[in-house]
Image (cartoon, rainbow, N blue to C red; front, side):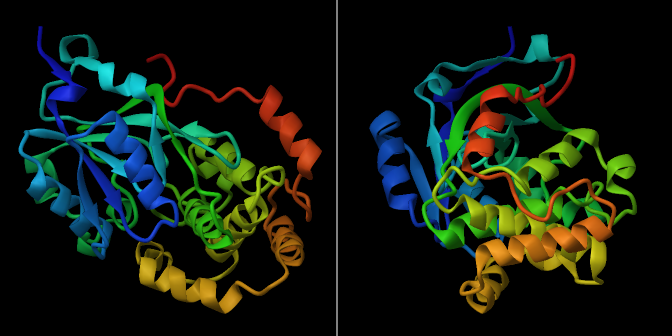
Length: 294
């Protein structure tokens, strides 16, 4: 049986400036004492190549700086024959988002091969195609799994929550990295639903409103302006933009962006769900499988 054991792979903690990175790295080391770390590399493509460079195994796992790993992940064995793939594939599990309860590929655990990462051209190193400008996930040998083994804690500060929401607000408003009209009919339905949740749910979590504000801002920039969305991959730009807007009234901006999005035809209220409504939503909402029928 062709298989890959997670514990046979290097596990690399990949951090940039996350306010909870040190705490999360300590948590990872308590579970995986041999875990390696890459920190502060500019550019997502370059950062992943740095992870590949320090890996001593063909396959390696990346753990984002805002992520807590479920110990059960360490027992995972990928049965390649059952999956119908070979050992040159990249694998992406689901991850839980602490603010809104979504479970999909955002911030989740990924398993890469050194050769693939060394030769990929994405983000700041893009080959120019829409689907590599701000994403990794559209390669033919990128296998998406339904199991969830991590939680992304993106609510530590207003800045962290806003940045996570803004980036997803942009990404979920695109179709394979390209701008489209009529999101409901021209984007993948799961991404459209996730976008609406990002823009409405989370008031019950500290700093959750900032994620909602960010998601609405990112979406309205795509739909209502000619803004260059490729800067979403640039964390320096994101941090500078945050400095410009951080003192704005978060609830007022949520409402203003909501009005713009209504004008663009989105089924959205000017105000987000309140604390009790958000709690109720997360109690009854069931995430669909990331890949249906798998």
